[in-house]
Amino acid sequence: MRRTKSTVVALSTVAALIATGGAAAAVAGSDAAPVSADTSQTQAQSAKDRKDRHHKAKKRLAKHAPKGDGSKVLCKRAPKIDKRIDRVQNRLDGGLRTRGSIDRLEKRIENAKEADHGVIADFLGDRLDDRRELKVRLKDREEGLKKVRAWCATQDDGKSEKNSSGESAG
Image (tube, rainbow, N blue to C red; front, top):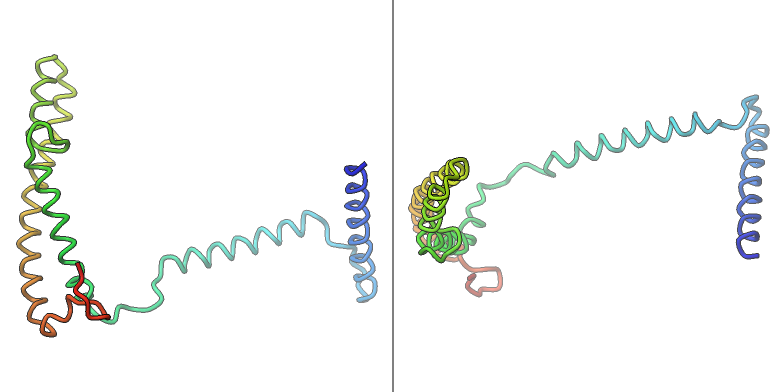
């Protein structure tokens, strides 16, 4: 009963919309018939394409050009960056039981060679090279970060390391 009633209501609504569309065209003095489904679908698709292109262009562009060099934010984030570098260095320097350590990866390579898994050993060897390079890059970044922190300390009497309420960040 309920399904039949809702179907009847839906069909009568569609019929009323179609009838008013035809009447509106006749009142406007147009000889054109109501717009076909294909035409309206094509128009809707082209409008959607224009809208999508507009939004994609907006996503790529910033609202305005940068007004500064970001030094204030960098000074504020320096302690967090330093902690992250320390955490990664500790992981790389960890022992055999530390996941992600260089020693653990060397042991895995040794085990792969003993098991005669040459392909696995080569793959892990490449990862080991990457980790050793990462260790060098982290040392360079740490030295650069020390210079940034020294520069930040000379600016604004150290105010750049405090947030707007005057509490120290960190």
